[in-house]
Amino acid sequence: MSEIAEADRLEGWPHPREAQSLIGHEEAEQTLLRAVNARLPHAWIFGGLKGIGKATLAYRLAKALLAQGRSAGPLRTLDTDPSLPAVRRVVAGAHPDLLVLRRPADPKTGKLKSELPVDEVRRLGEFFARHSAEGGRRIAIIDSADELNRNAANALLKTLEEPPKGGLLIVVAHRPRALRPTIRSRCRLLTMAPLTEAEVRRALDRIAPDLKDAPALAALSAGSVGAALEMAAFDGPGLDAALKKIARSGGRDAAAAHALANDLALAAQAPRFRLLLDRLQAAFAERAAAGDRDSLDSWQLAAELARAEDSLNIDKRSIVLRLLERYAAIGRAA
Image (cartoon, rainbow, N blue to C red; front, top):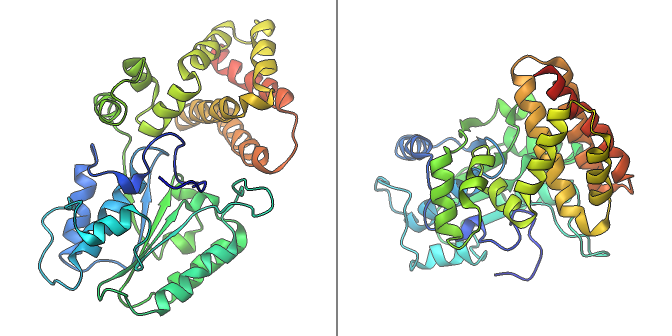
């Protein structure tokens, strides 16, 4: 594994490019195979919840196409032989015809930047202008489009307006509807559904067979293997129990809210703070989907605070209390 921080890797677990298989999403794979064997669009958006396998599917498609090379024969599956040179180079992050764009590290601090900047996206132009090193397609993966800043989105749109011959762009997006309409209109959208609880459990058994509380983590995951692994690393079940207690109280248990806020305000608790933001965003989104306008506003606030947490010296304690107050309102309304 690389020693360099990778924004698209969940620390402590295999990178999506290393996966040899994908649990679930059979319909999505068949859709891609039909497109590959007919006329493959030059740009795709793989949309769906974070951690459900979008990047894994993107790498599966890249491996299959790059392993195929100049062969004109139809693809029957996205499974590939891990011993093939092209596949080994993809897994090593060293294939010359595959460009992956993700948040880079700040050279001054060594920490990952909070956004995917324009300079990274501009690399697409140079990459697609080159001839294929191995005679096949040139493939670029953006993981994820949710992290593009405004200028980077403009640069992406420019590439989409002038689609490269023999090029394929795969855009991973956790919230595809939040992308600019002009970007969405120039890509084919492949919507990937959350996994079932059983599928998450199967994935956990494969990735982390010794994982404690796997059934509980799968039940709490909302169909996301990534979410289950994050909760395993940062006591997600304990955090979820605290949230449920606050929701049941309808906001009347101020001591529980303050205890949680005090705990998550500590610098050492930064991963759990981010996990809390993810859990609250999911809760607000579920209520918003049911037509609760206040929950939609709360979801937007949580998303904005999650972005600010990466770049600003903010008062985490007050943020937690502010969001928990809104979360407790769900309990009162339920």
